[in-house]
Length: 52
Image (cartoon, rainbow, N blue to C red; front, top):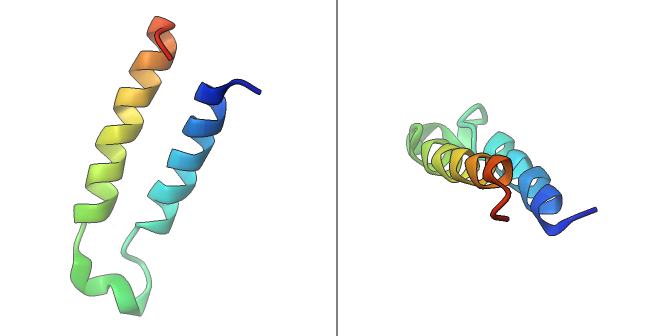
Protein backbone atom coordinates (compact mmCIF):
# COMPACT_ATOMS: atom_id res chain seq x y z
CA UNK A 1 0.00 0.00 0.00
CA UNK A 2 1.17 3.50 -0.71
CA UNK A 3 1.74 6.15 1.93
CA UNK A 4 -1.26 8.12 0.70
CA UNK A 5 -3.61 5.17 1.16
CA UNK A 6 -2.35 4.52 4.67
CA UNK A 7 -2.71 8.22 5.52
CA UNK A 8 -6.25 8.27 4.12
CA UNK A 9 -7.29 5.23 6.18
CA UNK A 10 -5.73 6.75 9.32
CA UNK A 11 -7.53 10.06 8.80
CA UNK A 12 -10.88 8.32 8.28
CA UNK A 13 -10.40 6.42 11.54
CA UNK A 14 -9.46 9.63 13.37
CA UNK A 15 -12.53 11.36 11.94
CA UNK A 16 -14.79 8.59 13.22
CA UNK A 17 -13.07 8.66 16.61
CA UNK A 18 -13.47 12.44 16.95
CA UNK A 19 -17.22 12.36 16.33
CA UNK A 20 -18.87 13.64 19.55
CA UNK A 21 -21.20 10.70 20.12
CA UNK A 22 -19.90 9.53 23.49
CA UNK A 23 -20.68 11.15 26.86
CA UNK A 24 -17.11 12.19 27.63
CA UNK A 25 -16.77 14.09 24.34
CA UNK A 26 -20.18 15.73 24.12
CA UNK A 27 -18.82 19.07 25.38
CA UNK A 28 -16.22 19.20 22.60
CA UNK A 29 -18.80 20.06 19.96
CA UNK A 30 -17.93 19.46 16.33
CA UNK A 31 -14.50 21.11 16.47
CA UNK A 32 -12.29 17.99 16.40
CA UNK A 33 -14.27 16.26 13.67
CA UNK A 34 -14.48 19.48 11.67
CA UNK A 35 -10.74 19.97 11.73
CA UNK A 36 -10.11 16.34 10.81
CA UNK A 37 -12.73 16.63 8.06
CA UNK A 38 -10.86 19.53 6.48
CA UNK A 39 -7.59 17.59 6.66
CA UNK A 40 -9.32 14.60 5.09
CA UNK A 41 -10.63 16.71 2.21
CA UNK A 42 -7.16 18.14 1.59
CA UNK A 43 -5.60 14.66 1.55
CA UNK A 44 -8.27 13.34 -0.84
CA UNK A 45 -7.70 16.28 -3.21
CA UNK A 46 -3.94 15.72 -3.09
CA UNK A 47 -4.44 12.00 -3.79
CA UNK A 48 -6.69 12.75 -6.75
CA UNK A 49 -4.17 15.24 -8.13
CA UNK A 50 -1.37 12.69 -7.75
CA UNK A 51 0.74 14.85 -5.45
CA UNK A 52 0.79 12.54 -2.45
